[in-house]
Amino acid sequence: RDSAFSKPRFHVEIPFGWMRPGEQQLPYSATDFYSVYNCAAVSDASRHITLCSVEAPLAQFGGVRTDEWRDFFSADNGTIVSYAFNNHWYTNYRPTQSGPMHFNYAFRAGGGFDTSAASRFGLEIASQPAVRIIGEPQEGSAQLSAKQGSFLPIAGDAIMTAFNKAEDGNGYV
Image (tube, rainbow, N blue to C red; front, side, top):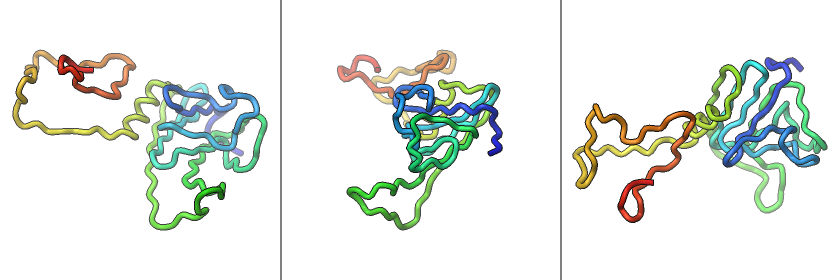
């Protein structure tokens, strides 16, 4: 098969990190399907494409691999297959799904693969911001002028996933 990627390398976001199929998994573990936390990517030495899918968290890499049961992962092309429906096993549910289905995907392409940038992209797609408009200053709130800057600056590759008032009311966590 022809592929836009020479020597493709796949990346799968997992909770609190990333893994590379075939490189960072146990020998003889499953290589047909991978569970994707927020996004997955394919890269080579100079570029990447990241795919995020909120509603379809299963993926196959290198093409459709259902029931191949390989001992080790290998792929000669950069195909990522989103496994939108998992009706392969008929254990404790109906093997059919009906009605309108909507799946949203987001893609990002660029130079070399960067796990921090990909994680940030995945979080932005999966977690829409909760915004609350406050018309008047709240009692006891700090008033910052434009010269004082941001209430909470975040530098570097840090990603803020939660921000709450401390339970004792003294500060924020």
